[in-house]
Amino acid sequence: MQRWLTFALCLMLAPAWPAGARTLKIATMSPDGTTWMKEMREGAKEIEERTEGRVKLKFYPGGVMGNDQTVLRKMRVGQLHGGAFPGGGLVEVYNDIQVYSLPFLFHSYAEVDYVRARMDSLIQAGLEQRGLVAMGLSEGGFAHLLSSEPLKSRADLDGKRVWIPQGDTMSQIAFETAGISPVPLPISDVYTGLQTGLINTVASSPIGAIAFQWHTKVRFLTDVPLIYLIGTLAFAKRSFDKLGTEGQAVLREVMGRIFRRLDRASRRDNAAARDALANQGIEFVSPTSEELSQWRSIAEEAEQRYQGRNLYSEEMYEILKGHLRDFRNAPPGDVAR
Image (cartoon, rainbow, N blue to C red; front, top):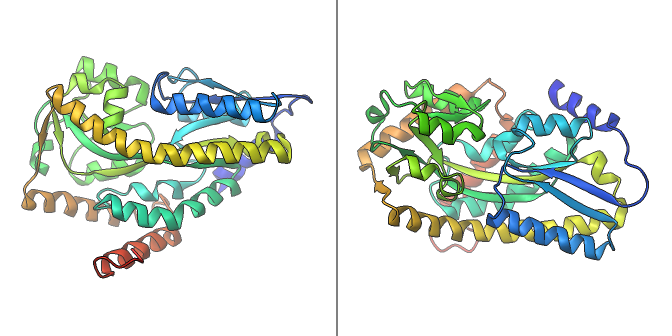
């Protein structure tokens, strides 16, 4: 509670822009040339045209502005006005954003679609209450374990040097539940970590593995969805409010449309990336039903350990679980699904 109050206060006290055209400075870890950046630049061009140059977007891709925590800090003081974040990158502002990323939470994309249709607006509202205006949520896909050796069972993790994002308490607890001490690193250091042997196992979507070239340092992909990933483009509310009613409306409309398009494109791109990984020699390994049960048992135990750690609110957790129960209990083919 105190964290997000402090964040909101810092945003309120950030220096005001001068009158006239507004240039929103936006940081992202996404490398230039990716689908995400191409869509963002197209959106920026449309926004500039429709506002007759009164609202411009300037992007800093490839992590040149630092990791998520650094970007948030720069937003607090007005050096940046927005950032593209993975869900876990905004935990210090709004911890419920990571509720979709509980290990082995979703069994299929059909479940994802059902839950997100009912909960995305709640998450965006929660962010705005804490000083961030999100343009939408974009699917990152399911993360899989990629490693230098095949990983089918819990025992295969023994001795592995597993990367987790720096500050990712949820993943830390999950791997510790499996008896593994993970290696926390900022995403910008993962490739070097794989190159030097500091780490030899990562969790990533197929798109992410290719975009960051991690696939060149691993040989196997465990073909089980580990966690579901989302991302968002969020602006400091004070910066957003400076745009005026017209500018805000154009920004929301254009970026909202782009995020819906990115959602659809991400699923297609991840499917294509899976094929690309296979074509480049990555071997897909599938656990047996017994081995899969071991993974899910670890996830269930980790969820129990999450309780009381303030990783997400109990209210949001129960809402999500309720939607999953509704979906799973509905008769096959029921339109309510």
